[in-house]
Image (tube, rainbow, N blue to C red; front, side):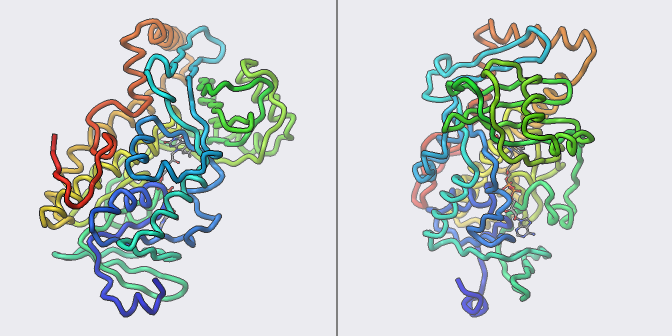
Length: 424
Ligand SMILES: Cc1cc2nc3c(=O)[nH]c(=O)nc-3n(C[C@H](O)[C@H](O)[C@H](O)COP(=O)(O)OP(=O)(O)OC[C@H]3O[C@@H](n4cnc5c(N)ncnc54)[C@H](O)[C@@H]3O)c2cc1C
């Protein structure tokens, strides 16, 4: 839609999503068949390489997230060259004997999860939205104000030097972990700074990875080596934030030596490393994710440590449940911005969010402690998990994103306008 067309239209939507990153774009795709009129407002030019959500990183998506994207028709559009399945997961504690091994055979699935290039996922989401007539893409445009009225919310945006005003029944804030709008709208946020920074890069191991994802806990933070195509691996290494400049300025050889020392030689000698990028790590929590005509999703609602690759998998579950609740309300001609509708969503999501946030936070506290009884306890825990099928099964379910209540999209059911919704 051009700017002139925008000025001519009334610019009133059922819902406006602020942020076209992974969470915002996925929500619009999930609601694509519901007949709701939507707009996505994204600060960075649409399809630009600068898009921060679809940057050079790769992301591990769980088996459950794959099922969701399959129902939405997005999975089928992701470039297969950019997807590497995870057949097994190896968890270890550096310098100690505890370890657990999870395998797809124990779960009876094709893969426990998938390592996907963010850009490829972004391309599939953006292409799908461009083809959808129910969604207006307003980009580049930055939302600066949200005024909530009795029947509508009014958003003020700046778009290429011009002011733009749009209105909707509901505003979905999906503007990421450093959400400016969350604070402006007075959502109370608490932050736990891990004093860790993730260094991410490609590395080439000496031996084939055989589709195994390694999670190794070290005293400075967890180190993940994940399988990629072309015999490469993706490295996510949490180091002390005070040391990050040193790690980034090391020569390739020096960096690989340090990595080798922490990871060991399960994959032979690392021979090459790609460009290194750094992401400071913190946990963000909000006391409420809703207020009248406003809801937070994805990283705007919660940011967790990347250990165990839970962050966006959690955000995608938010998206599917929000889509389901909104589609049901829209189908029954209810006001999608009404607090009682949003409350249904929050009631469903609160438990999963708290559990994942506490689980990832607890893992970091547990595995960075150097107290002898804690080290002994966690190694015992890893060994017991490896040996007791019930424990292993519970961990597998969580890793695959299959614990707890599953949304319609996760169960392969569409949200089409005419569908009958159940609240089971
Ligand atoms: C090192 C690292 C590794 C990770 N690995 C994994 C993993 O393996 N698996 C996993 O599930 N998760 C992982 N995560 C978490 C995952 O990256 C995030 O959960 C995900 O990117 C959040 O997506 P989002 O759309 O909520 O936010 P973002 O990706 O931050 O997107 C927000 C969007 O909003 C736009 N925006 C911001 N402000 C405005 C505004 N005012 N107006 C308009 N637009 C605006 C931005 O341009 C951006 O496009 C990892 C995170 C890190 C840091």
